[in-house]
Image (cartoon, rainbow, N blue to C red; front, side, top):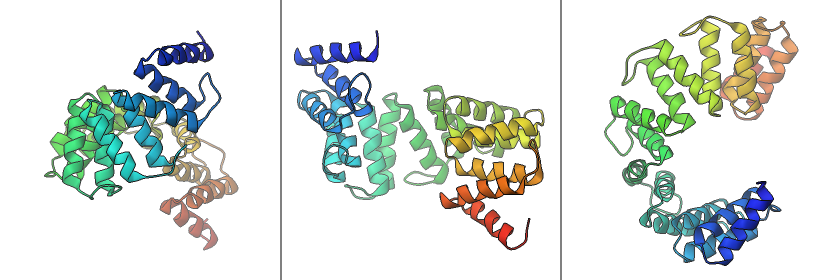
Length: 285
């Protein structure tokens, strides 16, 4: 069944009063899957679902308010909707509340409250909640700093399908923080994060191949991974790719291409990329 047919079925079920189907149809309008993309219709459907008791509809409506898509932007309104969805059992709403508390958007800035909502989401089976809570433990924000708990939570996030959790767990193994120092495991988790769509996982795996840590040394594989991560806008991957061109590692040496990658990364905000551009113009190449 194609997306258009699925959208038709969602519409029929929504008209029959099944609120979760209204939420699904709203998501289709948000993404333009099987229907013409329309944020206004998505908002109306999310609101219909939320008012009808579907907690996920409240979460998605909160997202629309937070981003100002199809409706006037309001973190305060987003927070109200996330509170409703969290109370209604949608773990994503709990994590989104945690994010707003962490950033101080629409709610008081509170690392402690952020940690509590992320914990609630994690216990509710939402992998991103586990990842966010792990990061708070790693940084010691809102909770006592604890690398062992951070690593354990990153592992839960990774098992739950969160690609950032896999990459972060790889980094913990690379640094020996909260887990055994193990380059092979580090590379394995970086690969898992990369395969699941986390560009930084690709960059980090490229770094491992470039140095032969946990994997057989291969500049060619490193370049391929940096190309992939750069295409997905991980700026460190772009800067690293520039270095490979500058040094002629895994590719034909080319200062112009090196500079183009450095400049791209710099223009997007990568400090190291800017340093490499400065090096070029100060005679460092």
